[in-house]
Picture 1: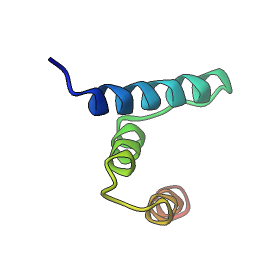
Picture 2: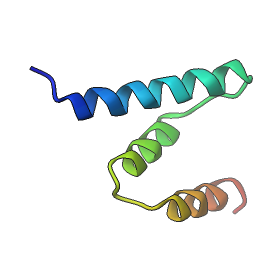
Picture 3: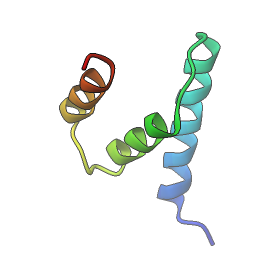
Amino acid sequence: MYNNKILNKNFVLNNAIASVGIEGYDTTRIDRELCMTFLDNKITREELVKINLERFNP
């Protein structure tokens, strides 16, 4: 049987990806991995923002 927390995180992530796609943006494997890392509480929101700023504004 699947862990409900894992299913819920995947559900949340897939909904977010769909919403971003509707707005015309693409997501990468790295985007999805970073978001899952955030959802797993391995990084903070501030760290996630900092990582993305560094990725897109070298």
